[in-house]
Image (tube, rainbow over all chains, first blue to last red):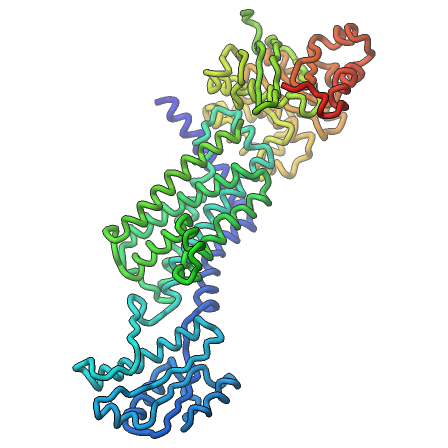
Length: 374
Length: 254
């Protein structure tokens, strides 16, 4: 009992020391606190893939009731701005080349008449796909407008097919901030947990203070806990910060359980911290540790987690690699909780993967930490 | 076993793969002795110290430190020793008293003990005014003296000093050695490595490691007589040179 009390006071001493390190390193402190806030704003505004005021050209060889109705629908939404109505499809080439139009809707002649006779009425959607993501986004917007019209004039369904069906679930507004926030949480946590832990542990190596701690009666787990706990706390606070900011600034919903989201966040922090320890055990300078953490954790989190690039659009070898990227699983979990509102019943597989990763990495990192002493 | 021997090593060996870093070294150190542990870089000093401080398990041989076995009782050893590395071992972004408090806590001193010993230490060193200064802001010589005092904070039976005076000016080095003598006369065994041969002369006994083996051991004057040299410096060069200058192929292979 006595031994426990004194050991825990030694641990408290370590935690206090780590707090001094963090609080006195002003620059790092500012960076840690600003990263999440700034990132949310950057990703929220700068890297939006939402499309508004798409410059739309209309080719209408024989204006009739149906084409006029559709045209007014396009004109009525904020997503489109009609830049010109021309009689022949050859005329839109000019508009595309000058960049005046991003998209064109081409009606076939006698559109309303064909619809009236129950014949397929064709409408062509031409999209400027110079920027492929935007291209496919605005294409989908246009399809949606046409489909809605089709449904309305033909509630019985089936007889007329104008366009193939496109479904947009869970994020019908296609609001990209809804998608980026979970990825951003993973990114911020990776920076704080992996990078900061790796750097602060290698700093102790460089300074020679780690050796002094190792020669002391402290057990390796004391040193690791003392090192890691403050960053765990900071990471946790950042997650809450990102959720609140996303909510207030971008109205990103949290449809599922906050407690579950935080618990999964904690799990992901543990995985990232272990990676940080692992990196620091293999490196001896802060510079190398920083590089290792960037290549080994930050880049995969950014590129292979579905944060910025959809996983489905990756070539299959990279998709394979993404299975071992912890962020991939966390991003899936966080998105599902926030946007779909689902619970553990649906997410137990991803959660299990994260738990296994945490256990394996914690064991490996503690062991490699011990080996390094030798 | 003689009870005043605080460090006893018998045929202590450590291999890294095929490389024998420490090759059956045998020596002992008495209570309150200042023992100089010399050797060129890479001669195996660090490996030996790591085994004695419980950081590294020996491959074979035996050793006890403060009466505890290095294989099975390294945790007990750690409580009985103090350690100061060649690299500076205090935290630069903590104040003097925060550092003392941290190490006091690590070695299970009570708050009261920490307070009393901090007071006594800072008065003895004449540092009282600097108690709340960041370590970063105090001169290197002071820091070394402070680090040594912190290594002695928990009254260890043995203190290991790994090149404690490297980069320190001659006056501070002299003061540092006075502190070493004070500690030794209070009964603490001092196990010190150094590159300064004049400092080797200050030791009660020295050993010189050459290529993982102990090339010579004894008091400085005994060794000088035995090898017919005028100074420990000459003695060191004579022992260490052949190994250090030989091409790698001709070095003894395991």
